[in-house]
Structures are given as C-alpha cells and as structure tokens.
Length: 143
Image 1 (cartoon, rainbow, N blue to C red):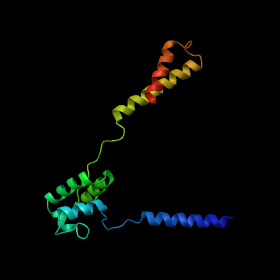
Image 2: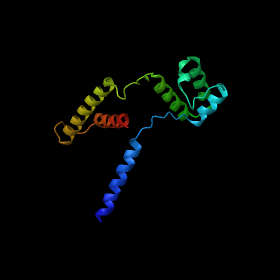
Image 3: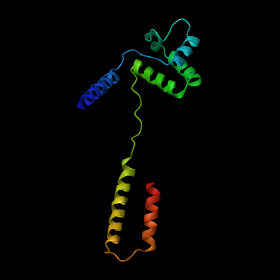
Image 4: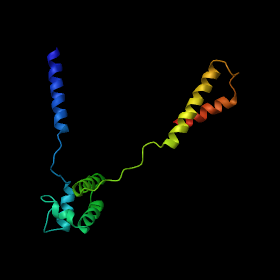
C-alpha cells in the first residue's frame, strides 16, 4: 500500500527537477524566425544572436515585424528574450496594492466590524436605516 506512495513521491520529485532545470539555449518562437528570414536574409537569429543585438535598428525592425505578424504571447516572449540577451533591465511595474488605498480600507473595515459587533450585542440601541445603508454600501464596495 505504501509502495505506490513512494513511487508517486519519486515521480513528483523527478517532474520538479525536470521542470526546474533551465535551458541556456535561447529558443525564439517560429514566428520570429519567419520575420528574421524576411527582414535579414544574410544572417539568422536562430543560430547566432550576437550580431543582431549590436545594431540599434535591427531589433526595432524585428520587434515591429513581430508585433504585426505574431501573437501577443510570441511578441512578449521575444521581447523578454531580447531584453535578456541585450542585458536590458525590464521596467518594474507599479505595486499591486497602493498603501494610500489599503490603509483606508483596513481602517474602514475595522470600524465597520466594531459597529456591527456593538449593534449585534445590544450596546448601542437598535438597528436603524443608517446601519442598513452602511451594510449595503460596505458590501457593494467590497464586492
């Protein structure tokens, strides 16, 4: 009974090791190779990329061709490989949550929960229209 769990663990470990191994070879999408052969017939990006990154106009012409002829995934894959090969640090995007938005949300949630607890335990009179309005607005903003 436990033998199959052992084999499953070994198989899972092998899959993780295989997935974790990163290839040093730069693999461009097939659409990029097509754009490369259309634009630059004398050199190929598939076998040697060093000549390609030396010129400023070649990568821009190539990225324009890829943008018009390839899918979005192929475009961003090529752009990522281009930045990696040329040593360009990609721009860091904005943070997922801004502190100026998160702090008021936490503060409002804290006071909302306190008010509901106080109303539920009978500390502050009965439920009024203002309480129902606060509950409805909080739920609509949270969702």
